Length: 261
Image 1: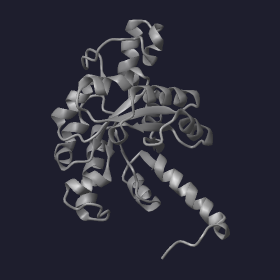
Image 2 (image 1 turned 180 degrees about the vertical axis):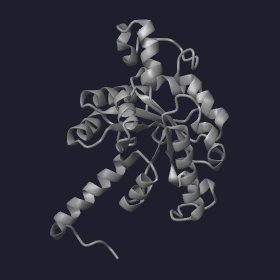
Image 3 (image 1 turned 135 degrees about the vertical axis):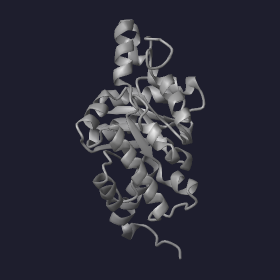
């Protein structure tokens, strides 16, 4: 549900999160927690097709090492958005295109009076039936973490309305998809892209909520933090593994054949 992550953001602290998808396992999640430094782990169901069982075990591992967790989902239907919540995770809705779509997602994640999420305290978020229903509803509405991804020009055009929707925690910028949608794919310094990022930052500030980004480099992260960003997604599992292998190559270069020209 990510109550600690919500609290850290409310305090204005810059938070750091790590993504796992293709290499998702409870052992990897446990390692991230034991190595320290991260506030939460997010599970990428959009691009790696994680099963509900994988989400449940990864979220369980996160709780065991003091990490919060949320799941990136393609918000195609109610069940897709709701099931990670019952596994004890928050959610991040990918590819939001409009304020109307964003409000539909919010209604799926919250109980009455905010929404009409189905009531079932038999999952991890309800203590497997041990949390009384009234407390379950109250905690669910108070503690469930919901991020909306701003990675399309349509969402940028309506970002002020999206940011003002009740109970949105974070607007999470996806710079790659956003650059593509703006017609400048992978042009990270293009004025169109930075103009969109600045508009999201203003909308979040005006609404009193937070925004996040997957930064491209330390300098990019610093620029975003200076603009008010309070959540940095610092790496994916496959990136981290590749960097580790390259570090081994560099440390033991004399024992590896030279790279082919």
